[in-house]
Amino acid sequence: MNTTKIGFIGLGIMGMPMALNLIKAGFPVTIYNRTKAKEEVLKAEGALVASSPAALMQENEVIIIMVTDDEAIKHLFTDENGLLSAKVSAKTIVNMSTVSPGISREMAGLCKQQGNEYIDAPVSGSVKQAESGQLVIMVGGERSAFGQVKPILDYLGKLTLFVGSHGAGNTAKLAINALLAIQAQGLAEATVFARDKGIELEDLFEMINNSAIGNTFIKIKSSLILEENYKPAFALKNIVKDLRLAKAEGLDSPLANAAYDTFQQAEPTYGEEDIIAVIKQVDHL
Image (cartoon, rainbow, N blue to C red; front, top):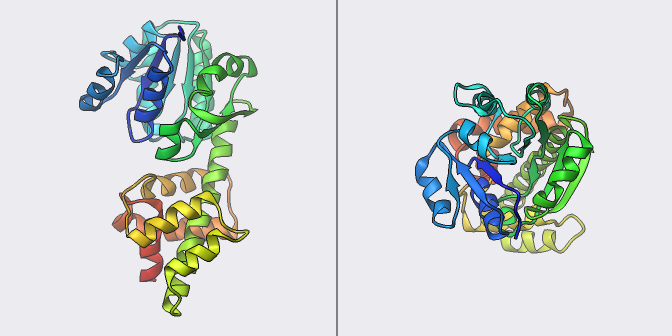
């Protein structure tokens, strides 16, 4: 049995299956989520529930965070009952959210002042990979802290890789998601072009997925296009956020800029749908 006491914050579409995998692996897991109904699901699986981030920080050795953005991170750390208000030391905080490198460096500094470790460990993958423990995890921070938590992260991902100092994991994730946006828009544009020229989409996707340019992302998203299923595995509004963060870090290239413009235009109408709903925006244009 795994004895490290883990606190888990953020039970969204990714956080929920990740926390469940840790419970199934035998870790004692305590959870905190703003939406209390989601806590009940994991409570039924054996998780304990903390009354606040501060209480969770006090009672656990490793704290894993999976929330949406920089603002949520600031609140979790610095609010009246936030993590840092616990005023404890010798904890390791693993922020697996897709946030800016800057917020990770800032929070790492605040953690260090209290004698705690912080690493940024965002993930590549979607709900299916989270459920099956097949995520790709990229880690920034102190290598010694990475070594301590890697056995835990290995229950969540098929690859856990140390990529540099604080914020490096976030930078790597922004690079990957910039490519993700470009691929999504490219698939959308090719699909609309072929369809408008009379090519059956089933035939188009069979050819693509059996060619050198076929990949897992295209296989998944092409099937969703055929089904006209835009239920969000990764919401379009989140790729807009990630492209915005990447641009703030200096990403300024032709394809990335084109993707950013298209997804920004799509967000007001399709932001709550899956990333591949960008095809509706391309079709409209």
